[in-house]
Image: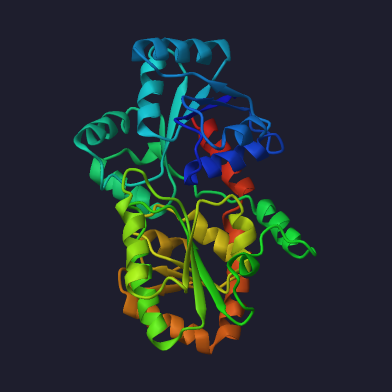
Amino acid sequence: MKIAYLFGSLNRGGTETLLLDVFRNARVQKLNAIGIYRKSGNLESNFVESGVPMCKIVATGIRFTYLVKLRRFFIDNNITTIHAHQPIDTLYALLACIGTRIKIVQTLHGYDFTNTKSEKWMLRYIIKRTDTNIFVSNSQQKYYQQKYSLKPEKQQVVYNGISFEKLNVFAHQQTLSHPMSNLRDELNIAPDVLLIGTVGNFNSVRNQIMICRFLKELKAGYENFHFVFVGGRDNNSPHLYEDCVDFCSENQLSRNVSFLGSRNDVPGMLPQLDAFLYATNHDTFGIAVVEAMAVGIPVFVNDWTVLTEITENGKYATLYKTTDEIDLLQQFMVFLQNKDAYKDKSHEAAYFVREMYSIEKHIENLKHVYSLD
């Protein structure tokens, strides 16, 4: 069994981070994999060094030529299963594999809420033609299965996996005399200042402006805090980032808030936070949430279906009403008065997610899907 993973670009993102962790653990987990990508990106060297062979096949000019190259590559390398993570790559795989016995598996990482007409057409075409559709949560599977009348036997849920060893390495480095990244030193923040933050690119999936509104309310009654937004600007929706920066400037929050952009040291930053806040519009899983839970810090997330699911209905994180900054404020003020109790809860959460969402378990579940008839 040999699995070919199809990529668009190798830029930093949630899907690419997940697959990089899969590739780095592939040999130990006995996963026979190869990666095929169309465009370079800032994670290209990481993938090349992951231990899994990588092949760049550029899709320029006539797409028929690209399909011919793909087909030849699949046959020459004895590929048994293709795993795509974008609808366009699923379509390419279906067309390139006509007449072969190669299985096509796709993971749907998002919802179709913001799809264009052409994207909706493509999704409807491919979703019933794959051998298996993988969803990253039960609530996401339920949505697609009902909307597209999918056959239950061809749908599988595989939770995303986290390389907790990566978190452990960063945590160890933070205990050394020269930590890799000390946020308080970097931002010139005193030890008694409450350091809180969130992680995620500024795109339509997340609701960072709601967090900004919360910070305005928080400062009205509690000023000894500093908040960090970690995540890059989305070139397709730059206003989402700019609106947050402008809001913080207009509401005298600039001294309390830092926009750090995209960072490659997030695992080392998370344990330094006193609490982690997250707001989503339509996440399908929430890798950043799980990573924050895994390092044992108090986590606050809105009661969107997926986050309710991965936190066991709020057993392992504090839920607040979606888009309601006042409810978040009320929940957060309780935390400020009971930090020790919240810390105990966060330790239980760390144990839970490390058992439930490990990269090793993720790969084992993938191998099970690949072996299905």
